[in-house]
View 1 (tube, rainbow, N blue to C red):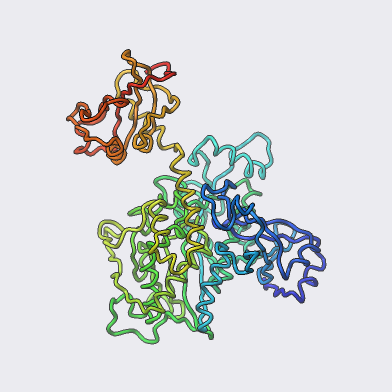
View 2: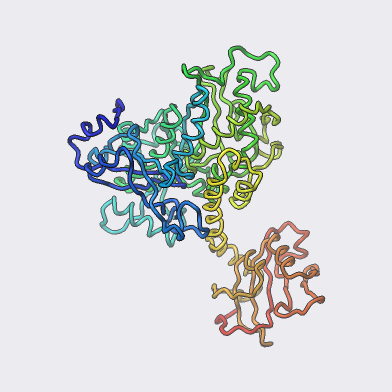
Length: 601
């Protein structure tokens, strides 16, 4: 389907038979935020834009305002409007909504009319402009994996209602594992598995074609109900838009089939995660691939780069140099880091290699690819990442490497039986969102150098918000884990969760779940605590005293006033610090009587 070129001069003619237009912008989480407006209204704002509430940059993916007051949108400025200007080059029609016209918008600061510092499309455009000023362009592609679940049955409700409402309601009280998969088993690249849901499978492909979010490759991936789409390689701005719109297509089509697609990085424990790999190359004004080497280098620094140009080597070195500093962009959620674990086909270190699928950066070049197809595959991002941010970050770091002529200091990742395991000696990437965010917002972070402080402060603040929400949450993992630990106490155990009692020790609260049991007859309440080894060490530090751990016995403190903590009694394996256990159950005896107790121990 040929794309229609829309300009200010012909937009009214193109929309001649329409009565309404849908517009949408992209927020920090990569979600579309938009509205339907009359054609008259749209034509009146097509040139200079319209006011759009800045709160879309002031709240999270669940429309909860951020804990930290961020500059763009906050209580102090009243969550004022920013300016949204339609990008007429993004015109397409929505085939599943009666071909209503659709345009993407970009956001601008109302005072300066410069691109808003956190606008995903604006950030990518600014980074690309640095290259275009020197006659260089960028090309990109994307691969998205995603799980699909069948919506739970709810009586005689229509299929569409089962998907849009019952799934959300169901997941409030049930884990994701309770949802039935679209298909069972692994079966990557299966030709028959899509036939179980043929209309849906072909429906997504056809809808993407009509909506100008073209798919090059479409197949099942390893995992129950997992599909993968390779989006068409093309100019970086257009491809980033298509990547952002792809999820919109999938979710819209899935609704009509009672299916819930899931793009979170790691929906299910023990199964593969959902990646969002990005492919990237640079081209000259004539379209020549600038990463391709004219002839094979007889004396390369590493054999893997024998067919990679000097510019390509500098670009690669630049990405590797800054990779640890941009991790919140590549892995933006708490769940992202459940995917980035050893030996699971996901990269965990600063690493690269020719045709290496365990490395963070996979070089695709001759002899396995044509010279004109030479490119880098950025394998760290998950399907939950914002494609505009990811491509902007990689482009910025790579171009920094080119301008500073950085050399490769990291050798290619080895290949063998332990690939991605202990043999990978590269620098370990962040293990969690807290660690990643702390590095991202550090004063010497390369993210500040390539993006500027305003964006780093804003996006970093949004990630700190996610970390805080996670810190305050009691997860499904904790309950079953502590129920098992309770068995160590002896007959009776603790049979039910009770209200958590604040014992004034953050180390204990942070390390596990607190439970209160009845007084033991000496005017003391007891609190059972499930702690990790790290949590116990933190608790000891917070208490500010040396603790004595007796083998198989108890630990006590004699150097300070024992109130309110008299005894911490071990109820786990002997000598916890020298055994293989990673979990401990302790009993905290408090001299502060509680006003209420549970009905049984």
